[in-house]
Amino acid sequence: MHVDVIRSRDGLLRVRSSWEAVYQADPEAQLYMSWTWIAGWFEKLGCQWIVLAAKTTPSSDYTGFFPLQLRTEPNRDSTFRNELRTGGGYFAGYTGFICDPRFEQDVIRAFADHTKRLNWSRLHLENIFASPERLTLFLNEFPQPGFITEKIQRPDDGDGIDHDIYVYVNLPGSWDAFLYERLDAKARRNARAALRQAEDDDYRITTPKPETIDEDIEALLKFWELQWAAKLAARYNPRLPHGMMANFRNMLRCCFADNALYLPILWQGDKRIGIQASLIDWKSKSLISLLNGRDLNVRRPPPGFVLHLQCVRWGIENGFKVYDLQTGDFPYKYDFGGIERRVECLRINTPDARNPQGKLEPLSLPVVLDRALRMEKDGNLAGAAIACRQILEADQRHADASRLLKRLKGSPNHKTPIDLTTAKILHQRGRIAEAEKAYRAILESEPKHAEAAYLLGVLLLQQHRFEAAERQIARAIDLQPAAPMLHYNRGVALQHLGRAKDALASFNSAIALKPDYDLALAQRNSILKSTPHINLDLNL
Image (cartoon, rainbow, N blue to C red; front, side):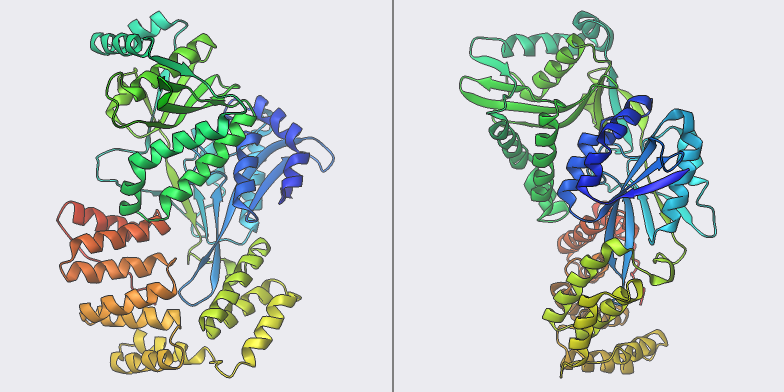
């Protein structure tokens, strides 16, 4: 089996017809693996993605596609590592690969084999949606001790909802059959009453036109923002809601342009009071509920309930077989006759959670260079030099990294990494007073040295000097806000100081940056349950 690697939008455009042929042939393919969804999502992501494309011979047609996202993350020693995620995560309801079923075993093994050749520390299989046979075939290619596979626990929002449970409704052949076969007597009465109200003269349901779609999407996002943004910002990260809205905006437009979006709008007079976005999977005859928003001041008719009923009715009229309500066992989903299935998140790790030999994936070199330039600007010259050397290990001819490293060596403020290395050795050997003195000396000469600032905070935390530790780690966060372990350890210090609300915010920030951060998830849950059990993240 031959595997090509697609790295550009033009490359995706060239294989569109082959992709769509494989998509139609694969009985397990679903909309989040369609060319429209993957191309739209990857175009928004920018440079860090690849698609593995399999064929039986170099000259034959393609028989499978495996989209992957590449992320570049910092290690605590100022080096970087790469992580792979299935295409679409964390945003797609389902992820995975597609293949011609005639060749599925060879294609899946080829995907696994080629993935192993890439440089990565973790492979995240988020919302992986594949038959047990296919998934087992893929995972068997990553045996221990070379790899460690684990199930990832999704974040607990504190509302008792299991997000590994996905709920869907099988649609019968007629609306009357749905009312009588899927709904109980109470739900049936409520459905009829809600629809009667929504069909009065003052109400109407419309769908967008090309000239109104942007306005309609913005109205939906405004409803969603008013209902959810503050809650998500407080629980996870202030930037999260606007990032989600940007993703929704992009993908809804892509799907509308490809006739893959059903967007009913409930009006009262000339005012929108509810909007429901569902993705149309024409191949599988499935309507996928993605996003809804409503005027929170309107109770009757209930906009959300009415629009779900409208989606079901439209789906039945157009021959659809499934109304997919996706993740979460929310009680309202069972009012429609919901059926459960499990969709999990898995992760494959290298033994030390680092790239093999520390070598970077070439696609990530521009990202690492950009971060090295930022470190130089922030005064972390030692960290910038380490990043440059790592780039040059992957590409000896990288001119920009060579020039930057030369400039760093010529700087009067340049400090060799040995100072930090010595401090860390003292710390690891328990020579705490000497380590503290060394960290403070580094920070005196380089106030913006992010790792020294953080490690000094860890040292203070280990000594139970919680107030000093909290202040010091807060300074380190100012220098390196995207490092989840900093937020986690600040949360530990705050929890010891009795500041539970502030500690919860810190743990939420850590989880927003690293959704599978087990320690932070455990600590957040312990606060929510008021039974704290504290573990430090002390990887030096």
